[in-house]
Amino acid sequence: MAASLDGFIARKDGSVDWLETSDEFAEGDTMDPEFVEAFLKTIDCYVMGSRTYETALGFDSKGLGWPYGDKPVFVLTSRELPRTRDSVELYSGDLAQLVNGHLRPRFQSIWFVGGGFVSGECLRLGLADEVRYSILPILIGDGIPFFEKLDRDVALHLAEVKAYRSGMVELRYEVRGHRGEDFGRPFTSSDHRSA
Ligand SMILES: NC(=O)c1ccc[n+]([C@@H]2O[C@H](COP(=O)([O-])OP(=O)(O)OC[C@H]3O[C@@H](n4cnc5c(N)ncnc54)[C@H](OP(=O)(O)O)[C@@H]3O)[C@@H](O)[C@H]2O)c1
Image: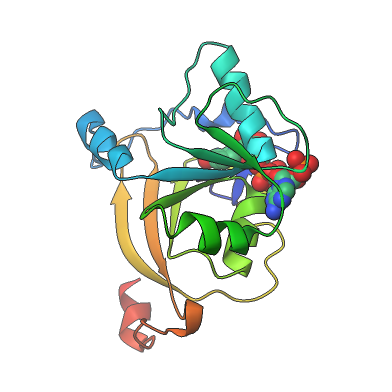
């Protein structure tokens, strides 16, 4: 997800108006639409919480589009929400059972769209292989945190960093030591110096 520098993905009322920032970082890369399109093709299905789905439905109804194409979208909810597309499936229950039991056997690349509740749950249950965290050049003071209610430490390996002309910094981390593995190397003092 994209977050403010102070770690929020939306304001408390769910608004994301602040995502449109106006910074310029001269040495940054420009976002290549062809690369983005090619990357989106690698995603096999999406999983999102109901509040994120409601935001997406709101954007769609305002004519701003549906960013998930025809790819299957699994919406976590205990409510009877509208399904505006055949590609949308509502699911209620155990997230680990959904991901390990139903999705992993069918899909290679499963993208958790958010929001904070679902990303916290995903990390807590050890379901994530990677975290993609984009920092926008803004502080908003309060809001919905990127990871809600994480109750333990989650060790990460920084795999990729990209800075863009827009002032956004994109971080890609691999989750270490989940599902019984520990594929990270030990932290050394030289890491600290070069950070
Ligand atoms: N900045 C970004 O990149 C970004 C990305 C994604 C989202 N967002 C924003 O984040 C906000 C939403 O985040 P959020 O943390 O409030 O909510 P969320 O994670 O989108 O949705 C949480 C809701 O999903 C339902 N749910 C979750 N797990 C479930 C399960 N296992 N079974 C049944 N239902 C389940 C529950 O609602 P019900 O059961 O009541 O339906 C729960 O309250 C929105 O404003 C959205 O725009 C921002």
